[in-house]
Structures are given as C-alpha cells and as structure tokens.
Amino acid sequence: MTSPLSSSSTPTTDPAAVPAGAWRALVLVTIGFGINFWAWALLSPLGPVYVERGLTADASLIVAIPVLVGSLGRILMGALSDRFGAHAMFPLVSLITVIPVLFLGFVGQYTYPTLLVGGFFLGIAGTTFAIGVPYVNSWFPPANRGMATGLYGVGMGGTAISAFTTVPLVGAVGDRTPFVLTAAALIAFAVVGWLMMRNAPTWEPSHKSIVAQSVAVMKLTVTWQACYLYALSFGGYVAFSVFLPTMLQNWYGLQATDASFRMAGFVIVAVIMRPLGGILSDRLGASRTLLISYSVVALAALMLAFQPPLMPVGTVDFIVMAAGLGLGSGAVFALVSQTSDPSVVGSVTGFVGAAGGLGGFVPPLAMAAVYSFSGSYSIGILLLLVATLGAVGVTVMVSRGARASVTDASSTT
Image (cartoon, rainbow, N blue to C red):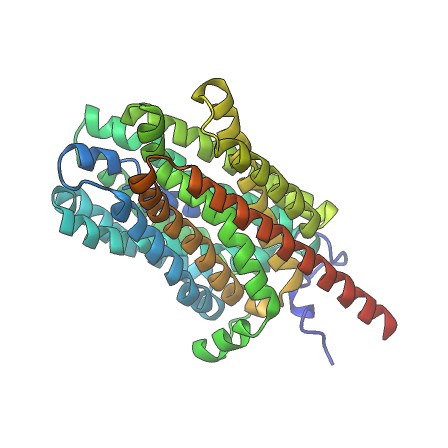
C-alpha cells in the first residue's frame, strides 16, 4: 500500500530536489499574501486618527474586528483551498477584498457604524494566509518546507506597507488615497495570479466534505498544540502590530505618525525573522527553534512590564520582542509541515491560522481594559509572560511526542 505521504514527493530522481516552477509559485503567492495583508491592516494605523476626529473614544474594536473575521475565516478558507487549490482561491479572495476596501475609502470611514461594517468584510483579506501555506507545501519537498513557509510568511510584511504609507497618504493626498491604491494592487495581483499561478503537479484536490475533514483535523493532537503555539507567536505579532501605535501614544506620549513608523519597524523585524524561523526549523528542528523563540519573548516581556524608558531600552526591548515572535511564527508552520499529512495541511492551517488571528484579537481589547483601570499596560504584559511560559511547556510536550513517534517507528522496523 502506498504511504499517505508519498503524494508529496516530487517527480524527480532526488526526492529532496525542488521542482521546476516552485520558486515562481513561492514568489507569486508571497506577493499576493503581502498585498492582502496590506489591505487587512489598513484600519490599524488610522485608529488614532479616527479617535482624534471624534468618531470614537477608543479605536480598539475598529482595529480588532478585521483580525477576528480574518482569523475565524481561515478555518473555512483552509478547507476550501484543500478542495479547489490556490490558483482559484487566491485571485478570487483578492477580488472580493476590493469591495470592502473601496467601501471604506469612499463611504465607510466617516462614521463609526460603517467603519465596523467595512472592517468586518475587510477581514476577508486576512483569510488568505490559509490559502498560501498548503500551496507552498505542495510545491516544496519536506526537507525545504520550513524554509519555504518561512519565506512565504514574509508576506505578513504587508502590514508594514500600511503602517508606513496610510497615515502619510491621508495627510498629504486625501482620505481615499490609501484605499484606492490598495484596491488597485489587489486587482493587479488577481489578474497576474490567475494568469501565472499554477497548482503543483503533485497536488490533488480533497474530495472529503468540508465538515468531515474539519472534524478529522480537530481530532489531531498536533492541531491544538500548534494552535496554542501560533496564538502566542503570530497572535502576539498581530496584537502588537495593531495596538502598538495606541500603546506608544498612551504610554510614551508619541504622535500618531511617529507611533505608526515605530510600529512599522516592529513589523519589519518580525517579518525578517520569520523565514529564519523556518530555516532553523529545517536544520535544528521546529521544537528547538520554538524554545529559543519563546525564551526571547519571555525575557522581553519581563523587561517591558517595568515600562522602561523608550530610548534606548524600550526600543531595544520592542525589537527583541518582534524578533522572538517572528522566529516563532516561522517555526510553528514548519512544525505543521513536518507533522501533518499533505492532504490536510490546508485544513490544519485553517485552524492554526485562526488561532493565531484570535491570539491577535483578544490582547488589544484586554490591553485597553487593563489601561483603563490601572493607567498602565504592565499587567497585560505580565499576562503575555505567563502565556509564553505556557508555550514553552507545550513545545516540550510536542518534542517528547515527536521523539516517542520516532522510537515507535524504529521498534517496528
């Protein structure tokens, strides 16, 4: 009987060889991911602006709703990707995202209720993460999947594009400009993606019902372990990227533009470290890489809880935090690639990606609540420290489980 993993091997004499077309596929899907994340993050840097305009006293819900929708939607999107493939799904979702982007640009950004409605549908852009991971997995052999998914994760740097450009464009050109530019980029990618993206030669669509496949994936221990780990790593990244401007304004008295640029620097560091997390996972193993990541995050959280001066200690602390979270984000999906059957990677990715997004949805609301009654974010940062120590424990459990699997396999040969 053929092993279920045999479908992932490439039609070459060397099973570790990267097939022709894989690098082009990776470049295209990473660009698409970046553009969709640019759209997904449009409201985050504008949160303080809407507060200044009197549309709301607190922008936390405005910036959190797209995160929530983009997170939960990944469960469905991952299963749909297993069935229909990224060649169809990525351009389609990109085109659908144009609608809420233009709605916000021309109508939605001028009242609080329409901001919430537009933000809800803007969350569709965040679901694209669950399309790209199984697509990349199907193109690359197992020995290179950590590296490949890590490089794909660079697309999350689309949030940096939003951070660097949105507020300056609104101030210099007009309210609608960032939304129009983003919509144009989405349309351009949808056309290019449809014409140039191809599903991997070895990819085969799943014919299971979406419900049945989702239930089967929910029974896998690694699904829930990876969910917790990604909720900490990527969720922490998302939480800081959407809430950091507000935090810097309240805690350190920065202006909106300065806070947005510092948030962009945080994003860039995390983006750079994400592929390194995948590469190290291929070489050292995902569990070891995750332990390094969470040790760094725990140390940074402990320092940050004491509200150090922004220059230079606080700035260095935020950079270290970004590095640890980025490293962990890359390593988690290397873990998924190393432990999941290729036929269900999309579905597993959907659940894990949803957990990561939810991990980014809750902290901004919690941090706002903590600040409202204590006047400080220290308690919230200490909660991050506790969650990180929990992630260390889960990683140790994953590592022991992997070693037990290897021992069992050896004993049967």
